[in-house]
Structure formats: C-alpha cells, structure tokens
Amino acid sequence: MRHLPIVLIFLFSIAVGRGAEVMEETIRKTCPIDPHSRVSIRNQDGSIFVYGADVSEMKIEATKKAYSRGRLDRIGVEVSVSGSSVSIETKFPPTPRWSLSDRSGTVDYIIILPWHCDITELNLSAGEVMIEGMHGAVTHARLTNGRMFAHDCFTNMQLHVNRGGLDISNEWWEPNPFSGDAEISNGNIHMWLPEDGSIHVSASSVNGNVVCDFPNQQED
Image (cartoon, rainbow, N blue to C red; front, side):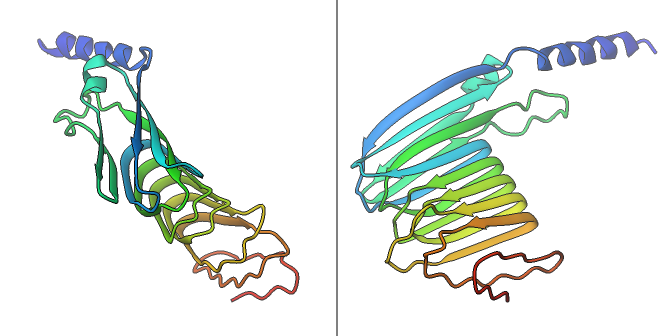
C-alpha cells in the first residue's frame, strides 16, 4: 500500500500528457527524378496521398505529429534517390518497453510524381491511402487497416486492404489496355467506371454479395 499514491500520481500524469495539444512538424522536399522511376513508399501510421502529374520532379510534403517534442524528433522521414529507384520510408522509434509510455506518432504524406512512374511498393499499416492519376506500368499498394482510394489511374494495379474499405473510380477512359487486381479481406470494394469503357470484370466473395449495375452485366 505504500506505493499506491506514487502509482496513482504516475497514471494521472500520463493521462494529462495524452490530453495535451498534438505537436506537428512539416518536411518538404523536391527532387528531380527519372520520369519512369520505380518508387517504393513505406509508412506505419498516418496517410499516403500520391498524385501523378506531368512533371519531371518529385515533391514530398510529410507532416509528422506526436504528443511530445522528444517523440516527434525521433520520427524520421528518409528519402533516397539512386538512378531510377526512389525510396520514401518513415522511421519510427522502437516500441517503448512500458505499455503506458508515449507511443504517439503519425506521418501524413502528400507526394507528387511524374505520372509514368511505377509504384512498386506502397505499404501503410493504418490510415488512409489515395492514388490518383498514375499511368506507369504497375502500381502495387497494400493497406492493413483503413481506407484506400484509386482515382483516374491507367496502370496495372494490385491493391490489397486487410480491413476497411477500397474505392476505385475513373471519370474517363483511355484506349491503352490495363488491368486491376483488387482484394479486401474484411470490408467492401466499390467501383465507379464510365459506361463507354471496354471493361471485363471478374468478381467473387467468400462471405457476402457481389452487386453490379453495369449494362449487360455478367457476374462471376
């Protein structure tokens, strides 16, 4: 019983710290890259928004957030460009030993790429992913928990969400052939595609329903 007041004070101080204002720091980088670069992006918590554009450089805006300055400073954003290979990776500090320690920290990315780049890996553990306007050969993206959006992409896509939602939409169509492989383990996939597109869709569900409102629909 002698140590009870100390424990209570310790728990109270942690609760107060968690209610404090979130600290932020934004990092901006601009790098000239090969317009057909192979790009990998890795993050743990936060968001990754990627936009393809008619540009010859890569622009990155990374916003770090945490509850303390010490924790914020220990979150790193590493960008590496080697020839036609580009790597963007978030480095989080090791998981604290004590469960009540400060584990805060997210990074939100806004990345503008030349639209013919290949996204060979986009990996996020928890949060939101947006991929828009990519025209490269491949786009591979994986999200463990959260929501993923792919908009106006004309690339061979492999998209996987473990738990959450996956939305794919195109407002127009292009004549060049491309394919999409979308998979979700727990959640829903929604697709919005133009009526005048030449489309073959194969869809299946282990537990749940497949609903299609395309004209002359065929469901697999």
